[in-house]
Length: 117
Image (cartoon, rainbow, N blue to C red; front, side, top):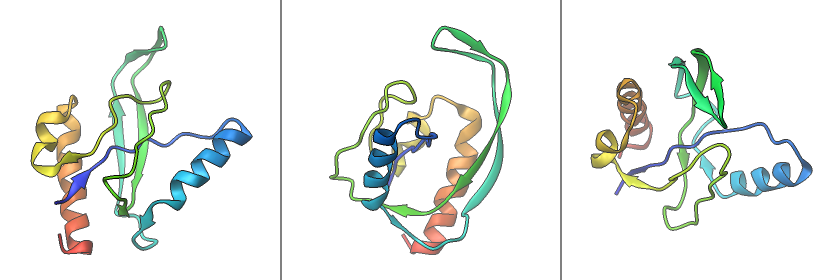
């Protein structure tokens, strides 16, 4: 069954984080070198760690990655939370950002073209 996991990247700040990131990436099979989708996403103003962050843009580069849904997922508490594998049929209901759902659908369709899911 196909699954989707939200992966948020971050710039490693310490040697330990660089090592952890390397270990995680070694457990993922990247399918090809081409970018699946390049999007400019609006992030509305919000609070992060008690500080207000103004509306800004994120450049999102997406790739097709294959991972074993039975592997343990790691939460980086200051970057993300509630990280889990979900069935694709539940993707819309699990999103708390309605404006990103069309992007998720585009990524799934493009991944299906590559992987023949």
